[in-house]
Length: 250
Ligand SMILES: Nc1ncnc2c1ncn2[C@@H]1O[C@H](COP(=O)(O)OP(=O)(O)OP(=O)(O)O)[C@@H](O)[C@H]1O
Ligand SMILES: [Mg+2]
Image (cartoon, rainbow, N blue to C red; front, top):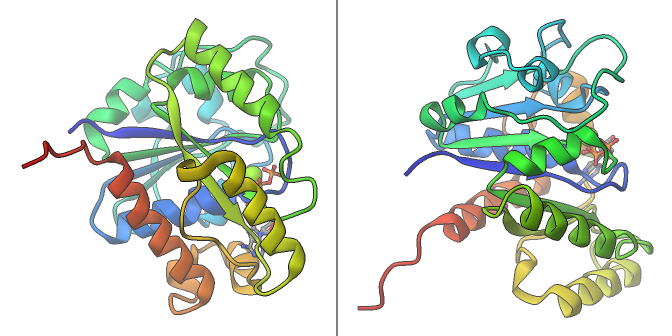
């Protein structure tokens, strides 16, 4: 099976895109899957979260046509490679561009995660134009559903104009606070609106998940027995199930 390219997208900021990209990638890498994280966000949070520094050779060079080898680097974690974000301020990309280098990445990796910035601008559109699936993290917050309709409409537009292969990998509820009315209600609303598209596993609000990036390591290294790690292991296994080609009924 060729590698899967998954974009983490939501134009709303701070919903857990980067945390999900880094930690899902770490869970899959730990399970022996060759995994690549492409940091398409000038904030470079996925880059620093994996203990690396933003560099001059970056994901933006991929958009400018650079081959994968020129921008790729290994991380300290087995099976986990990174295309870092650029150190300088963003602004280079005025128009979406094709991520042709991902064709080579599909050959080399089982999973490629594209961490998008919080906008529906050229970087995110480029990611969606190149991805097979979009994974949408949604924070268990009052305004969670706001913007989701717009995001889904954008995904639909990109599917029809640029990338017929694109589909939703699912919606992931993040930063849930157990037994609070707000989290319970938001989760119920999102499930009512999107049904099976929503991952069963819910990522809890966990200070360990928030601390891990300041040590430059994923949660699998920082505290693998924490509830946050547990959640991401379950999301990874659900994701693998969802991507598995449906077996023919016996
Ligand atoms: N489940 C969680 N529990 C506690 N803190 C979390 C959790 N998920 C993410 N965070 C923290 O919340 C902040 C936002 O998360 P993250 O950076 O993953 O969101 P994002 O959607 O990538 O943000 P941006 O839109 O700015 O790229 C970060 O400080 C992160 O460490
Ligand atoms: Mg981010």
